View (tube, rainbow, N blue to C red):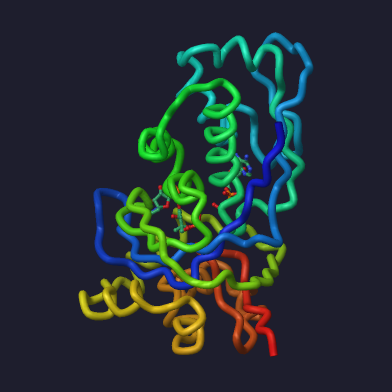
Length: 254
Ligand SMILES: C[C@@](CO)(OP(=O)(O)O)[C@H](O)COP(=O)(O)OP(=O)(O)OC[C@H]1O[C@@H](n2ccc(N)nc2=O)[C@H](O)[C@@H]1O
Ligand SMILES: Nc1ncnc2c1ncn2[C@@H]1O[C@H](COP(=O)(O)OP(=O)(O)O)[C@@H](O)[C@H]1O
């Protein structure tokens, strides 16, 4: 009972409008095949739900615990997790814009669905996923590349070749809420319909050839305002993922 829980990067991330205290996104998410947490269910008979691993948060805040609470009333889930613990060997840095916590929640839902025979469809899992976090639905669908809109709940597969992504994560923690506040107060703009249609239909590789780091991600400049030291990492042909702090580039074959 093992699985890989992959990281993601946002090839582009544009804001389309406001929804209550949140912002609607238009984004291309791609999975990073070279960066993943190793996930397994291991027999421990702890008699209580338990996660083994190193996290920067308490059990109650763990996305996997939140996912468990949403499904524990189903079938044999509670009994199963008295017998088995969730073990996560973390490789994806936290607070990094790589979606590690979201990916873990999705992997947990997918594995629980399989090993507890819950019989939930992807759409049913997605209904649970949105309650945990904005990026969880993307990981539930297990697409290598997808257009993601709304707050993150609309996920449409994008058919393209897999890119070889390299990431670096400065030792700077980016607070997503603070970065959105800077965006709203100092940089607010909305993507126009034509630009949205154009980006959603372009291959990731072409988007990255056409746009620079600021053009590709509306949260980059607000992130620099919040964490000025980030700018030292902004090299040519490197891009910014989510609300940071990770940068990424593509290893292109010659
Ligand atoms: C913007 C993305 C793109 O991938 O950034 P990363 O987390 O990957 O860096 C995500 O959708 C982030 O989603 P997530 O990380 O779940 O955000 P949350 O913790 O729910 O949000 C923290 C705070 O950021 C603001 N927020 C978040 C998402 C959003 N679409 N609009 C917002 O305005 C809200 O003020 C919210 O209270
Ligand atoms: N299973 C988990 N793995 C990593 N971070 C988690 C997890 N559960 C909760 N978190 C918390 O989620 C926040 C960061 O989320 P994460 O998805 O790792 O990064 P980001 O949102 O920057 O992409 C941190 O507050 C972290 O402590």
